[in-house]
Amino acid sequence: MKYLLSLAICTSALSLDMTGAVAQSGSISKAVGGYSFEEAAKESPDTKDFHSADGHLTFAIVTQTAGNGFFDPLYVGATVAGNMIGARILLLGSESSGEDVAREIEILNQIVQDPTIDGIIMTTSQVGAFDDIVKAAEANGIPVATTNSFDPTIHNRLGISHTGQDASAAAIAGEALVQCLMDRGIEGGSIVLPGSTATGNVEVNNRMRSAFDAIVTGLQKAGKLDAFKVDAGPEKTGIDTDLNDPVNAIVSLVESRGDVVGAFSGNNLFTPAIAKAVAQTGMTGKICAYGFDLGPAQQEALISGDLTGSLGQQPFLQGFWPVMQLYLQIDRGISAANLDTRAQLVTKETVGNIGKRFEN
Image 1 (cartoon, rainbow, N blue to C red):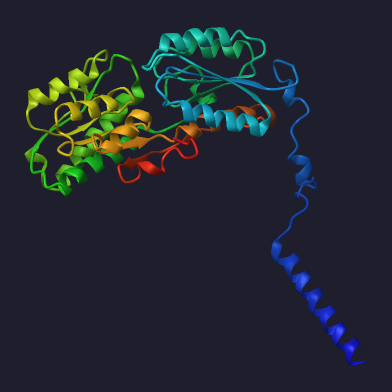
Image 2: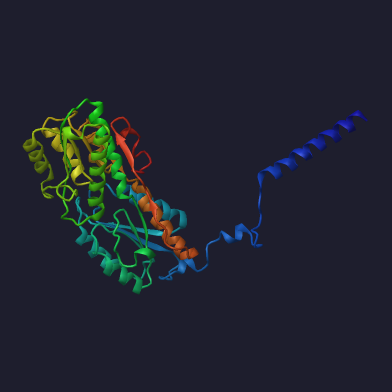
């Protein structure tokens, strides 16, 4: 009798525990509308035959420079996304180590006429240069997404998703530069922002303005602005610097000023050039040098100390999200949605954590 009573009590307690567990899980098996989530989550049977009608999706991602390593994590991100949705991803771009928009457009003109392509992802570093590509893609029924560099005036901008870093993130480097000066007890001198508007990259121009404003504001707050000369050129888009020989141009700039204590630039061309100029002039540790991107050259310069800090754009996301966005547009009819990848400030102390999962 005692045994049966104990068994009944245990069974009752177990039943209560199970009931509580189910109640606490908040499990929902169906939508309010009556359909099952499992069924609703399935891919449309028409998706794999979108546009090309060949039983699988093929997306092409094209950049203006595949030759310097910056876009490698972007290509990785696109590949990861493609693997997740079972899509074929064509990784394309200019072979140049510098920006080569003409070559990118040449590739895009071929891709947009390819009947096997179901979606196009492209960088748009030169304002106004890609309108014809977008129009041709639309005429051929191919959806487009832009990534990395942003063209605010591109044809059908509001209907095209963009993944990239807002230029205002450059203020993070501007603030860090001022803090570096204060930490090192530097009381005055020149802060130079070398660059070039020749490429027509509006995003880089906006970064330069953002960094300049942050430096000026930071020095004002510290009560030190009068002791420093901050020079980003007349339009705050950078001191005009030779694109074809940036290292020697920056060395000449540093030597001609004679009192440079800080430097910043907003792209993958001039940032390594700043680091090399710092090394060549023997100013490692004496100039607070900041820049953009986290390619191999930037990481080496951070380790050596020739570069104090650099901003990562998290380019993995700039490959991953556009692929997913195009897929959602095709499979779900979801409208174009933008993603701001923000910025990651990396220094000598943190550079060892970068790139372990090919994210930067």
